[in-house]
Structure formats: structure tokens, C-alpha cells
Image (cartoon, rainbow, N blue to C red):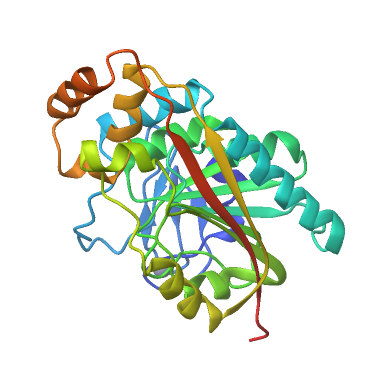
Length: 287
Ligand SMILES: [Zn+2]
């Protein structure tokens, strides 16, 4: 429900608060935004971003893959890291706000909210198809359409936790919307991620220098307090393999039929690839 998070959102045109007015969402200056029938709210200035958000097929693949439970251990680990950090620091007060940057269909956020009955979730993504799913993923999720690489239509100092799983990062904006006592959790693939599939399927891989670049950019605004890795040995059918490839960035460049042909030729009985993630927890530097 968008109304669970409306108080935390701002007008992307002028930065003022938003409120419901005659079925529309408006700021005091009259900038108005329509609530989509699917329940999400798009908060952009109307300029085309040119970003290839996840297509309907990609979102379907993602949901099918998640439904198989192959990444459920990552969802568990993320929730446990967030709850552990929260308990250890005792920082998060009443109604914590969890902001998921590039939330996709809201899988990880919904998992976390199920374990945190006081928290509300703000799912941000550029894909309309992903937002429709995220808006329905949990009653305490509000789904907002925005290019997460640019300004975020969120009040300064709102987020108790920011979650970023395989998504773009705007360190300055993430620092601005995070509470001074909040923290940022980032999940990135390690160099081992899906190693046996990358070559044969021509998957888009992790840029080797990316972890360094990520740390340098984030280091200006955040201090890392924890890093752990999680390797998942998966047992995947040919369908699982197809969904896994077609839910990711490779889907922007390759046809499903071509990927399927390679899979059936090379792994007719399925495969056992390893998914490998780095989970990092960051604290904001004082402003
Ligand atoms: Zn406005």
C-alpha cells in the first residue's frame, strides 16, 4: 500500500511533501501524480531516462526462479544480518523504514517485513512490471517508480535501513535519505558467481574492478562495518537455468530461444552452478 510510505516521499519537481487529494497524490504546489491501477506510484519529472528497466518477461523469469527457492538462503541471510545489526546497535526505533533500491518484485523486502512486524518497506524500481509485483508482495510495501541512479524522492534522514541487491548505487542520495543512525546493506556478486555458466552462455559478468570502484565511491559517504560472503550450491533444471539467465542483464542482449538451445545442448539434465554473494554493511559518515 502506497499509503504506508506516503509520509516519507517528496515531490520530484519541488521536493515538498505529498498528500492524497481527490484520488491523486499532490504536493502543495499542485504537482500531481497518478496512482497506477497496480498500486504503485511513479515519481519522475517526466523526462525519459532511457534506462532499460526489467521487461515483463524478465520479471516473470525472476518470479519463477525465486519461487523455486534457489535464493531463499540469501533472503534469510540478509534478514538475519539486518536483524543482527539492529539488535546489536539497538538503533532502530518505532516504525523502521526499509528502503529497497532497485527492489524488483520485492522478494527480499517482503521476506524481511515478514520478520519485522513494525517495519514498513519502500520499494523503488524503474520497471513498471517489477513495481506491480512489488506493490502486491507485502501489505506494508509501498512501490515507487523512480530512476534510482538519480535524485530519490524521499525525505532526508528517513531510512532506517537501505537495501541494495545487485542494483545501481547513488552514494550521495543514499547517504542523504539514510538516518544518521541507520545503515546500508549492499549485495554484490563475487567473482565466483555462476562461474561455470558465464563462458558457455556468454553471461554479462562482474567487472573485476567494480568492487574497488564501489568501495572508493561509497567510502566518501560511508564506513564499512561488516562483510561476509555466501555461496549457494544450487541444483537447477533446464527451466531454472533459463529463468536464471533471462531474469538478469543478459536478457537485454540475448534471445530466450538462443539461450534455451545452448542450455539444452550443454546441460540436458540440468546443472549445479554456485551462486556467490558478498553482503556488506555500511554506516553513514557524519554529514
Ligand atoms: Zn511539487
